[in-house]
Length: 111
Image (cartoon, rainbow, N blue to C red; front, side, top):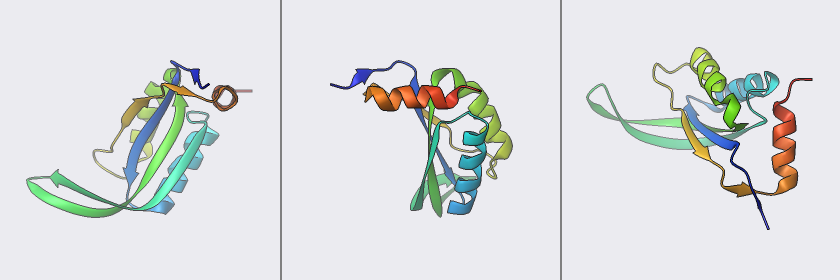
């Protein structure tokens, strides 16, 4: 049975290409703002921007983090991101395997 975890979060952001996603992901993991970064290349986004409907090829970056890291993660992501208005959506993790949740928590701690 999965363990409940009120602390774990998944953050979504889109970026211009997989290279930027990898750069951002590596930096945020190295800085322990995220325990894991998953790059999903080849997504297409359709959105309103400056009065027009736009379509862009992008990469999706999923960041696994904890509730306490979210404010610092958001600030750092905005500082590093190439977009004027980067996507920053946070989802609660309702439950997960205890071993994974323990690993996630330990990965966010500074040595």
